[in-house]
Image 1 (cartoon, rainbow, N blue to C red):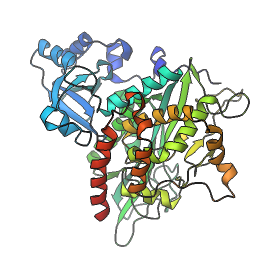
Image 2 (image 1 turned 30 degrees about the vertical axis):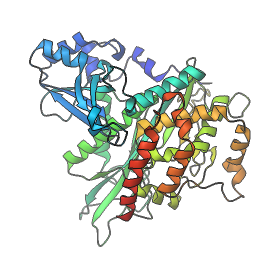
Image 3 (image 1 turned 45 degrees about the vertical axis):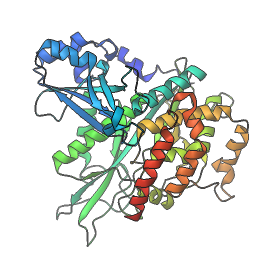
Length: 476
């Protein structure tokens, strides 16, 4: 088993390079304090404080301040500020008549906004209700409760990282020397035009404090056509394992950075599941690593069979995967991507190395002595670029706990084994429209609400609003 220290312990190591705030403070995030931030604001000439947070749509929001005094700055950093919860979470049951919430900054999340023309120090916030407790409807609260519930009941800290796939576009020119349809994997300049932007994004993310594993161009290159002179090329930034709440946060920040850079460079940027029918689309695969006692447990135990924790996770994902599409596959184009079968799962299966499976067990990289240099992971390949990562990863944790309760777990794992099903039609199909997803959500509503993670009634409220939106989308 891999005994690599947990990813967040790497603050004890010497980073090369560290994020900017850490370099300036010369201490790890866990030790940052309000007085540190006050000093930083003074020394760096900070003019704006940005309280950033994530709404129910999964995108970053901002509330800005210009501190008038040290006292004003301390008040903002310690108490935060009120906001309208019904506007931030319109589909999650918060009524306008009682919608006041509080944004409370997390000091350990501080980073300099790389896109602000004025020195701006940003903080990610949690949402609190009028009672001063974490707001039950907040996606941030939901994923944190799911993470803590799993840890409390099993001793497992579930880590995750996303593969952020995206498309960049440009108009065709006479000097273009780019590739061919669906042939862009690991291409380098001058055969891709987005390499500079991708590398810039990776550097900015490191400065912010987001842990990046690697980046590369992806397979989904789309040539210009007679009626559309836009060349689209696909890239990926793969992040590093973090606890579920941090992993969700990292995905949202990465998308924010990429959108900002694309805007600056004058390029369209898309996370849509499909840009053009018949071509590879953008997934948002998540790698998962159950972690306990400073050990990545991995998928395969010492006997060569699935580990106990992997059985829970795989069983839960193959059972509840259709319901999790409500959070991970939120566009009509999600179903187009899945139906094409281009390295996207169309059936409910799991398997080693199998890129068509819903759950894949990737190969593990080792050095010449056989030592694992990266943690073993379990890859969930169903979600795509329309994902709400907070709710999806909360659902993954709930699915793992549900898998732990299944009396027929052996039967489920056997009936969804891709290797076993190769000659038997490939197994049950994933939902192919919004109605089937909604049906799966209703079936597993209690499992999602278990332990108070998704508040009672929230799933129903989301489904009601969601169904109306999807009907309108389908008619368009």
